[in-house]
Length: 535
Image (cartoon, rainbow, N blue to C red):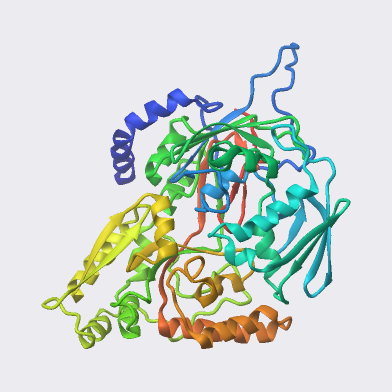
């Protein structure tokens, strides 16, 4: 009865939203759900189930369309700069990379624009590029485009640290040669993960619109219409070298609240609700009338502490911040997401490590450390926390810290403003996701490397001992040594607290019973390229 009342209350709140969604459609919106279960088999590249084929009577079949609801949509189609967890899921359907990263193991590569590759020596790789790739405007992909796509990483602030790993790029025929600056066992992975295949002439002649609003790329979908932050409509095109997807049209729409996204699926106005909480997931499983999909991610949510801020230059205050966080309660507030107690993601089981130096929740210990630093309710300090997405843990943490003498002014900002603050360091505390760049475990820990200050190292943490350990970990080929080094890195971070881990981010999504074959990846990419919809 209680769950029913909650659902009814939420339904009333989103009634207007649902009516609005009805206008933007979504294939099979009126389909009635019948039974739950896991998604079916995906469609392989090159042999997709054909959408829009002739019906038995000879008339063209109705195009296959779905509407997908995410909590946040991109503000642009620049895949390097706009890299929130749901932005990458939208943009991925338009842009290709040289290789595809395996959904179950992101350290495994599969052919995409590059059909094969080999390592020549410690710093040199060769890639054989397909000769049948077209951009969605009909332009043929050239090797000049491929070289440009890699080298432009150096010119974009967000990717400049990755671009700095590239020494040179050259080609002969359809063979691309990539040289990195020095031996580094994560460099090529990061480069391939970050660089999308771009049309050099189109970008250079089209200006900002070509970059942000009207992309031309080699993926299976092209952009029909785009309202930044609100809606993106994509349609499949016949010239894609991997074969046309079964789903002809995908409308991505933004619905901020988990419960609202769930109800939009329940009422048939969207076919997929991405990244809901465990609460909505349980409702779907109890109902037994939906398909559900789950996955483990290599992301966690953290409170980043600006170590250059006057308050947080003091490591004892940063440790007090960790003692003040009740991770178990905060995880419960977020729909049962697992609390994060390590600086490595749990997906990397062989290297995962929880340092004994990581503070557990202890309000008395937090008060002791704050008081020693002169922070008390009678002598409070003011700090600012910025975020771009509502999370109940922010208000919870704010209330706890106020009891200790830290008054947190919370500012909700638009995502591009948030990204600018990451780069400039104009914040005291930042709520956000800790993201893995490149799928390699070491990339989790590079967020403490001073070389990445303002890009990956958002906390602006600077510790020469930490830098030296990360440098060693980058070049070792011995797993036992890597394990020892990553444990040491975890221990230092647990003592110095550059950021406070909050909870892990598993992937929970609910979808129409007629939708199957959606693939999940560890960076929370939700892939509809091979999905099938029969509604």
